[in-house]
Length: 107
Image 1 (tube, rainbow, N blue to C red):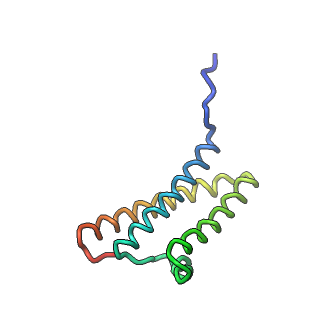
Image 2: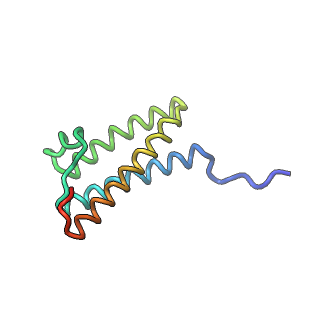
């Protein structure tokens, strides 16, 4: 006998994780910048002259376009690897935020 079907399948979990990590990246990046940190990503650094939040949003539109293409073509491995990458970025951002909040001169 089979148990109840899960509400979210693996693909949906991957997509939701991707969205959560993108929001977390924007939030932690903006927090780090507001605390005096600087952007290390060269692509995003080029977008910063239009404004920090605007540059971040534009970069997320680009990332989202790639994610949509991956989903449409069934290449969920792209999202899974992106999730690993962006989880690392969020952890890095949290490390920078902690250092800035504690007064170290990282960033």
